[in-house]
Length: 425
Ligand SMILES: Cc1cc2nc3c(=O)[nH]c(=O)nc-3n(C[C@H](O)[C@H](O)[C@H](O)COP(=O)(O)OP(=O)(O)OC[C@H]3O[C@@H](n4cnc5c(N)ncnc54)[C@H](O)[C@@H]3O)c2cc1C
Image (cartoon, rainbow, N blue to C red):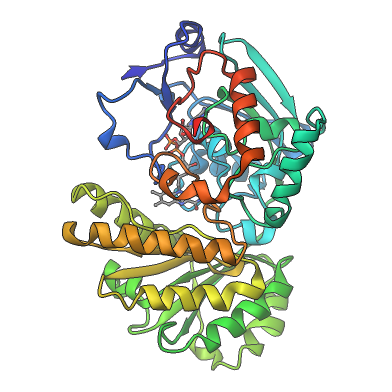
């Protein structure tokens, strides 16, 4: 493994064109880093000193090993707030560009793709190049066809292949395959007082009527509710948490408009308001982060590669998605369900023992067939990395493969940036 202390050292390494998988905090759920030592050259970027600066108009300039947690505290110390809030706060912000990371606040604020004004990256010679969100990519017939194929995913957090429209898209969701992201300009908003509520409801497997009612109602509150997340009863039991109502699923919301949300949303859910619990911000984040963290830790301890989903569907298909998960839950393998409920984007995770791993793989193959039929996005958040490559091919056609080849030739002529990645499929 190579560890970089500063950008000059990184530039020197890049200029050798040695094939390298650069990484930041290694929280990717689609790259099994603990299986890769000795398999490929890994380049540690998290050791490069982080720098954050507030520019005019509330834009943050971020470079080096800054995490989302660092960026949020810095923004708040200046009376600003991030629009993006990935659940794993120890992940790197620059890595977030590479993975096109999304998160809880995508419900209220949309995607990172639209929040990044400018990206500076190091190209295959280690030279700095600047990409602007305001500039469109050079037009071509092939690109137009690729963009046409992307249309069904335009409103999703991420599609099965990256959006290619503006210059900054060349780094967003490319998983580090075209260069190393060095610095970004990220939009922020003025900090507002926030409130958090926990809504208990029955188990989704028994009846999802209430879940769907909340899902439909919450869509009208995207300007007032920043996040709307589900943690099911299986997840809560798996956590062993005793601070929350037992035997129930929960939906947690984050709002910046207390009165409106209380009077027009919570009071219209047909529930006893006394059952709804106000949470502190710390409890909300803790609760939300603990489930996927425990899955990641348990899988790593048991040397099992994660068997989970990351699919998003359009609102009209959300009931069908829950139906598919219900069937998957009947296969006799323990599972949990949690995630970005308001966005129609949930993570169903099998918790298999070693003997059940192959069955999970087969079930996931069937799952992606159904997602394709629903025109959903198979990987809306965590990307493709290495472990989702098995599932991506049916979502790609000639246009995508041709564009991928062209991008690699132009931006990575020595095939040195994460050569095992999806662009080389
Ligand atoms: C508990 C948990 C919760 C999570 N929640 C979310 C969530 O809400 N939303 C979400 O989007 N993801 C989530 N993830 C996945 C993961 O945190 C994200 O993919 C994150 O962006 C990875 O950041 P990292 O610093 O750990 O990157 P790494 O895992 O180190 O690397 C990930 C990828 O980014 C590339 N990369 C890293 N740094 C750079 C760089 N400077 N330039 C170019 N390429 C680079 C690497 O080559 C690799 O392909 C979660 C993961 C866990 C374990």
